[in-house]
Amino acid sequence: MAGEQLMGKEDLHFLGIKVVYKDLIDNGYEVLNVRKEPDIDPQILARRNGNLLFIVVRTATFPDMGVLTPRVAARVSMHARKHRALCYFASVGIANANGDTDEEMGKPEIDGEYYINYKGLQPFPQ
Image (cartoon, rainbow, N blue to C red; front, side, top):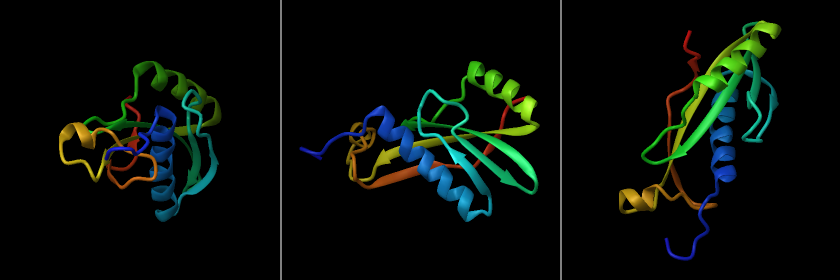
């Protein structure tokens, strides 16, 4: 691990978006737009079975998972109502696959190998 460049927050966020994007494409979703900026919500706009979907992606490092805050959920839900969109959350966890300890696994490296923890889209809490 020595000498490798660790992922920053933006690198981590973008990797999470790529994981979700690939899952959507592989499962037949039509992806209409992707925003990689961490302060723009939702990150992904998609369509499936005639439904417009707003997808918020949050990514964290091992052992954590991305978290949807109530504030973001409320703001995106309000915006989605105006567009008759359904809201989904994608929580992603990234671990350094070459780490031997929990501490090393919690430090993913740019262009490294990763373990991905992603359980699919979850509807926003009502």
